[in-house]
Image (cartoon, rainbow, N blue to C red; front, side, top):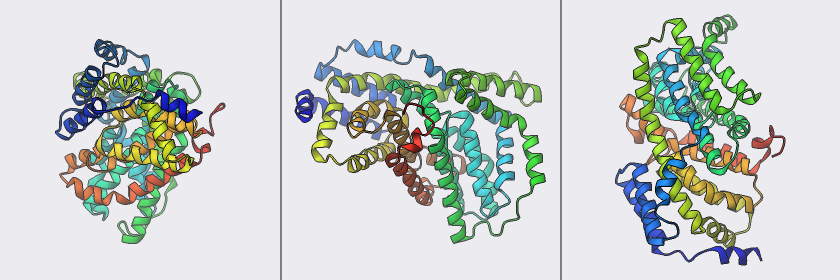
Amino acid sequence: MLWQQLQEQTVDLGWEFYGPVLLIVALIALAVPVWAALGVGAIVMLVVTDVLPLSLLGESLFDGIDHFALIAVPLFILTGDVLVRTGLSNKLLDVADATTGGFRAGLGTATVLGCGFFACISGSDAAGAAAVGRMTIHKLVAKGYPRPYACALVASGACTGILIPPSIAYIIIGLILGISASTLFLAAAIPGVMIMLAIMITNTIMNRIYNFEGDDVGFSFKRWRETVWDGRYALLVPIIILGGIYTGIFTPTEAAAVAVGTTVTIGLLQGTLTLSDFPKMFVSSAKVNGVILPIIAMSLPLAQALAALNVPQGVVFAVTELTDNPALVILLMIGILIAAGCVMETTPNIVVLAPILLPLAREIGMNDIQFCIMMITALGVGFITPPLGLNLFVISGITGESVLKIAARAVPYVLAMLVVVLLIAYVPIISTVFLTNP
């Protein structure tokens, strides 16, 4: 009975659907900006299918981004910029190094931990890759790491930027699917840390095999205590952000505002930030924000057109006709997400794929929260996989190292992250343990 209902809801999609989709792919392949490619595809689809009025485009562009939760996006981006300009990011890396640097593979582990600290504040992976990469890659090379491997390590560690809360990606998927960002942040805490630990463990194994760092020098509690005290103001920022969100004192959007206020205040009081720095920070953050929000705006009318064409129901029907085994359906969804993450940025993937795949996840009994965590984590793998691999290009840009060489050295980390993705997908408690009503 269910299959009949789905089949009745599914339209017979022809070239009026596949044509615009292929057009989007071709435009992106030709290096047309993603927001422009999505916009052109949405217009063509609306015109040729006549499924919704073209006037929807203008309405969606403005109504879609006129949302309180999205205010957090530019604020977290600005926080990351302030963090770097005030030198607080250096303090966080010093704390990470004092915590793990004395052990075997310690500098590599400290680098990944530093990426995790940065993720707790900025919510952006590219910003973390650039900031941590500039400060650590030359140290890793001096310690004995091959340059491409050092670049791959930083690029992989920076993937935690969208996986450890607060995360811009979780804000966006929460907005699209109508789920509280605070709930997603709570659910993502353990999976995000698991990704970070998986990268650390992989680096330790690689060190055992190739002996990059040699012998450890041991942990010094005195050095750790002094470094933590010296970096107390930097550590205060993630404590305030995450503590405020998890205790319910303020929302993620309010947390973003508090983060900006806290980092700016610390910078001004310490003299590491001056009024002349503000125009540069605003311009820098606006450029990054100007990449994200147009993609969201242009993706929404496309997503609405797909929904009106009953594409989500069609996907559910097609997949369940192929197999009704939940384990195989999960593998298929992960495969789709990994492939999508390889060729397109996270934001358009979220806006377009989340509404399509969520009904399929529900059909096999997967919780909405678990689906969101699985999706973001799977898409996170795309940051270190060609041909897009945003983190690969960021690190290549600051070091001059070949993207392909970095990607080749990142393979062990891709495999480690895939293991965590599978655990999240097949073990629901990992992402629902902190939720009262999962």
